[in-house]
Amino acid sequence: MYVIKLKEGLHFFETSYLNKADILNLNSINKKTSEVYKNIKLISLSNDFLVLPSDINKSLSIESIGKTLSKANVNNFKKNKVNDIEIYFRENYKNKYISSYHHISEILISNKNTNSKTLLLILFVDDKILLVLFKKGKLLFYNQFKYMKSNFAKYIFLVFEEYGLKIEKLEINIIDSFSFNSKIKNEFLKYFDKIVMYKKSFNEIITSNV
Picture 1 (cartoon, rainbow, N blue to C red):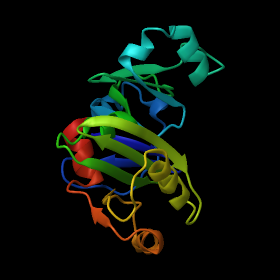
Picture 2: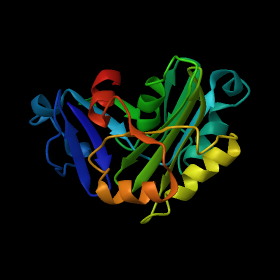
Picture 3: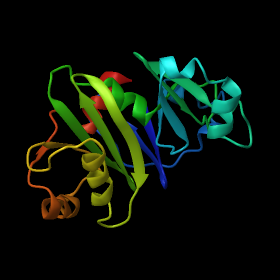
């Protein structure tokens, strides 16, 4: 069972469809309910994370990474690895009935494209926009931002400017999700002409990468 934590509860993903949002305190899972939730694969949307190349991490201490992620507890983070990328994020749930715990960045970075094209992926989840940029299968950029109304466009423009991308040439691949709707699409079309729906939906990416 795949679960993603949203600001007002949880969305439950299963093999081929998305159930309605539900609210659950994961820390309260106990022996009585463990049979139902023992296969939970939790996905975090936390903004308290770091995505770093493994070779850079060799020069950083665990303490310095921990302090960046959580001033209250330097050990309150989890590390996962995707190829030559290491991802650190705050682990808010420590429950033995949760079988795996991943940050959303880990899942999107795992979904890399191995061709020579520059690939820009954009995902809307809850009140966040997530941007992933690959070139020749290598990660150039990942970040996520909380947005309000139509101000998400500024984050996309920043990526284009930082990496010298041409708006009139590069296709923007939008990952279909429960948060993407016609209102967001219409706002997109005010600024960008070359937008396409990515070949995999959010649900398909999650169930194939977690």
